Length: 219
Image (tube, rainbow, N blue to C red; front, top):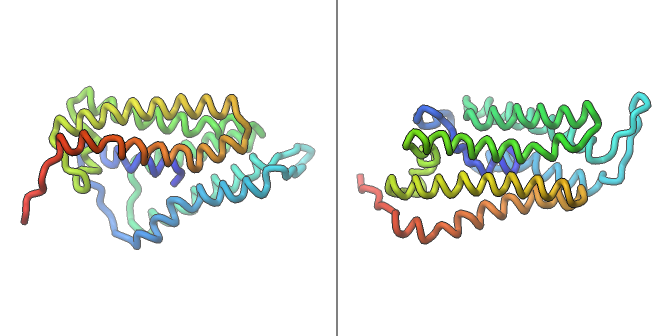
């Protein structure tokens, strides 16, 4: 999965509240399948950013070539995850669709702007899903994280509101970066900046977790 996809942490794994089901696989293998395409994109762009290839009279730059490879890598790794685990969460499916659509448009139209807008669309989708849950008085975030981070209902609602707003901020930040900075700056921001921002966000919630944390009951 891409960096923004991982950051989502399967927030809407089951919109109706069911727990994700499926076969467990080695966490190192799972991490490689999820992070692999992102790191490969960064490395490939670093080496091919000045490359140009002419196909049928059309000149394709390194960014477009790497984007095409990333789309294929996402399809392959997602298919492998599905094969190994026996399931894909709704967010994984939605993310793959957005990657194929926006990445495909960039390659087809030879226009990198579509792919650069993908993180914006994904973060807005995350924010919309969390917002929809909040309107229903529920925290979809709790559905996928309560096992590792037990909080009171009030704590989950506060954290979900904050994260939904944070996703909107990330969407705006992505728009600003890709529209005002170089391709290299955007690729670095997408690969490392967005992921670091998510880690920083959850570290900053330590106070909330202490105030609204609950103890797990012993079996």
